Image 1 (cartoon, helix red, strand yellow):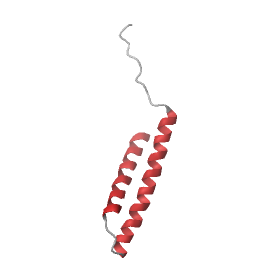
Image 2 (tube, helix red, strand yellow):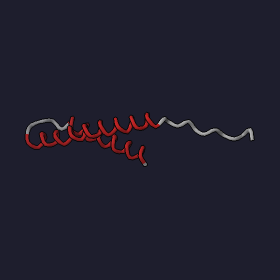
Image 3 (cartoon, rainbow, N blue to C red):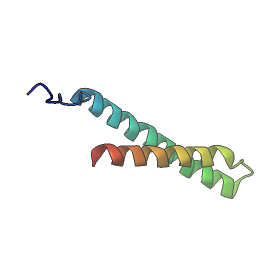
Image 4 (cartoon, rainbow, N blue to C red):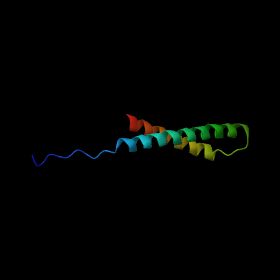
Length: 70
């Protein structure tokens, strides 16, 4: 009986909820910035760097959120 392993320590629920909420907020804001930025790229002479970076950030947040909730 001495070799029974302990349960792995889990992150508290509040911390996981807070992290998921932050991922949704950051991903949503980055998505809006990406869409508006790409529209500005199409209709003005705005550079495409910031919208591309925002789209990448949005994609990473979506991936992390889905990984966390499944």
